[in-house]
Length: 286
Image 1 (spheres, rainbow, N blue to C red):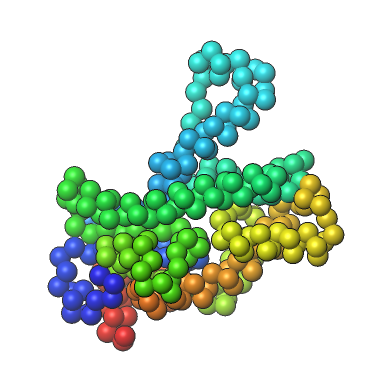
Image 2 (spheres, rainbow, N blue to C red; image 1 turned 120 degrees about the vertical axis):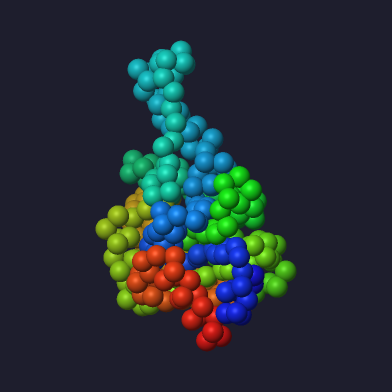
């Protein structure tokens, strides 16, 4: 499945794809479109992370906050209430909120060491959720009869793999299961994502070396201590650099492990047949 010819793709009875690229370019939209159109099983890596692998961390964090309120603490200790995460494919706020942002605690910031700890939890969880892809593809067929399968990966997939290593265990497993498709954005898409993020900065996962370097660079440039860092300012400052850091990694994944399609072409997809034709055209030009 690493990179079939157009004829090989046409002959496959079971169509399995994995979409990857920057968050906000249509991975979940297209996955939902395929699912709602019928005949496709939608596997969300971020949802799997937030439920199976980090669900306990997320709920414990809710409970920790509740225990600071005497009224809620009493109810929680007497089992009079329960606290749960209502994470969905479209609403991943419980996961991103748990990841948090580093900096001033009065502005909702986490100590940098705790932020690093949660980042590491996410890295481990993301790898595990990615490696579950083959299991869910087979499970979808065995249990529900789905012959077609779409894996909706997280934007940070490129941070937990080595796209230039031909023996990378995660990419090897994924490419044996599904056709990997990079949704490639333009400079205009990147600029719009940066503007969108600036309006509502959100937590995200970074490669450890990149994060540590940017943290120390931010402290030095702004001449602030850890406790003085504005969490939103830090993630805003880091975001555009993170996108630039990820772009060549996505490109290497597509070059070595799959194919790439333009974000504007994905935006024009309205049903499974349109996506199928786009994949065929892309394979024919390689």
